[in-house]
Image 1 (cartoon, helix red, strand yellow):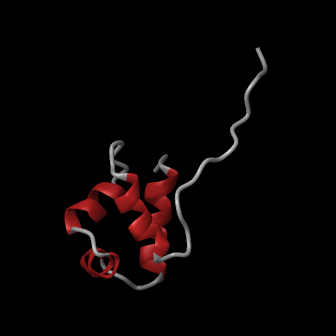
Image 2 (image 1 turned 135 degrees about the horizontal axis):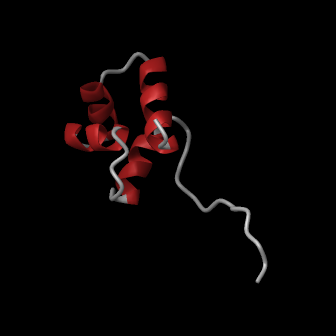
Length: 70
């Protein structure tokens, strides 16, 4: 799996002993959203992703990437 967010959520969910339906319930999101998130769907609402990440003490935010100055 080459999608870090998808892998993170799936691994943390399993570590917490949660099923996808239970995670969806706890986060207040739909089961389909959890499935899409764990499958690495490219277009997901960031506010809804943050509802899930909040349960694991995380949130989306900007990160620095290596880049060459022009």
